[in-house]
Length: 67
Image 1 (cartoon, rainbow, N blue to C red):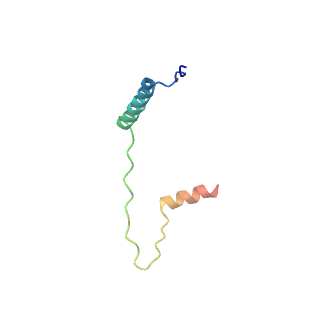
Image 2: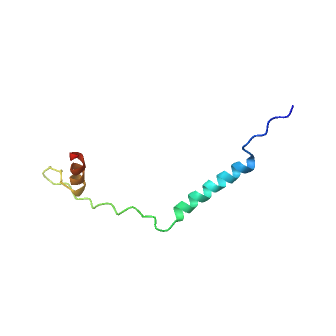
Image 3: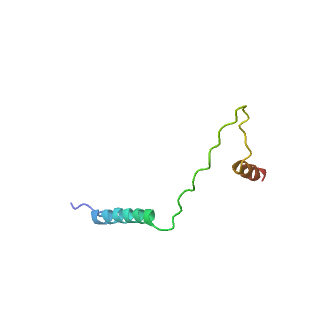
């Protein structure tokens, strides 16, 4: 008795894997991909405590939390 032929052949599988690898390589090498911005400067903590600072990040959070 002959076994049914699989729709997914070895050749198709390797072609798909090769295509996925090529797309991943191209995505990493594409020009115009933005690099992450430099991290913000870290300030020394105050000597007398009170380390909370109203920074732009905190202001943006409060702005989005209002709505």
